[in-house]
Length: 179
Image (cartoon, rainbow, N blue to C red; front, side):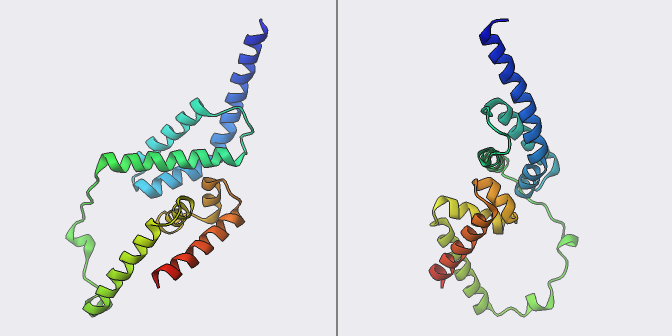
C-alpha cells in the first residue's frame, strides 16, 4: 500500500468514526429544531436526513465536538427548513370544530386596544428586521422557534452564557427601540 492510499484510508476511517459521534450528539437537537420550523414529522425527518447527508459530504477532519460543527449543522438545518417553506407554500386547513367559540375576554376586546397592539407588533417586527444578523437569528430562534439557550449557543457557535447575554442585550435594545 502506498503512502497516499494510507492517508486516504486514515481520512475515511476518521470520517466514519467522527460522523458517528456527530450524528449521535446532534441528531435529536437538529431534528427538534427542524420539526419546530416545518411542523410536520415526515418533512422534519427528510430534512434532518438531508442535513446529515450534507454533513457527511462536507465535514472537514477535525474534532467532532468543536462548536463550528454544531454551528454548521444548525445553519444547514435553518437553511433546509427555510428552503422547504419557500417551496411548499403550505396552507393550513382548520375545521370550524377545531376553532371553537371565542373566549369571553376575546369578545370584549377594545377595538382601540387591538389597533394599538397591531401598531406595536408592527414596530417590533420592523425593529427585529433591522437587527444585525446574529442578534436577529438569536431572537428568532428563542421566541419564534422556542429554542433553549443551549441550542441557540450551538447554532451560533457560542457558549450558553454568551447566548443568554446576547438574547438579554438584544431584548434591551428592542425595548428601547420599540418604546
